[in-house]
Image 1: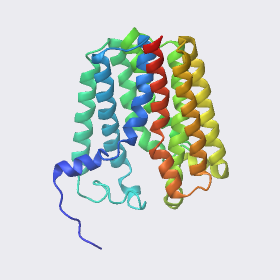
Image 2: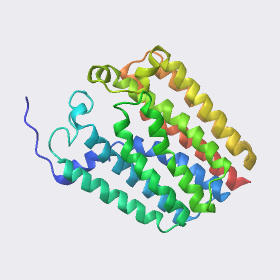
Image 3: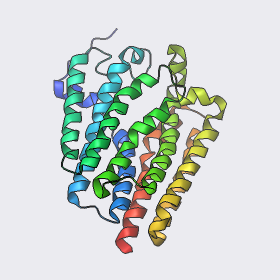
Length: 290
């Protein structure tokens, strides 16, 4: 067994929060920004934009700390994760917990600069973020629980802008739930063989040979619900162009995952945030030109 190369604490902490792998927070930030623009009927202002972009990055980073603490024993048996800082013993559980708590507190501080309704919705958001890693032990579709945790950004965005959470917000919430189910099932397909050996539950295992069909169905439902939620804003051709680009990417994902190779499924997951980019670009441009 090769010796662990000594690293600085900063390097280890950045690795712990996946600083060099931004796909995890990018899939979170784009639907949140879509919600901000729709709630504000256009550009929401620099204050809210800063709060939600920085807050999203911080909460995703805190979630990584919580996830790696919960999964430290399982990660030993998965090729992709066995070198993670906690699992390899380079960062203690106490250190990771303190870092995660600090990041969550800073994120809460940002939300405190908005409406009290947004602060109230932040409480269950933190609770679901903490609980998610443990659902992989008993829940056959933990990706759905992850979707609930991830989608609080949409709810909080509406609460911060208008002080309530209307039907449009819940349609966007549901649309992004299907998006999370799609891309996180792609991610779970990468580790399916290892997860089967260690008894971890994932949507890729539960769906079995219907995994690819289910992912494409999830994408279709996401696309349709997004269209229903945003069409009343009458954003014209920019929005529909963005939706068209998003649909083309969803079809591209099929070509990546249909053979179920680790490489193809990982590429699909790592590029999934570009679907959100296309939708957000259509929304932002549509409001700007309306």
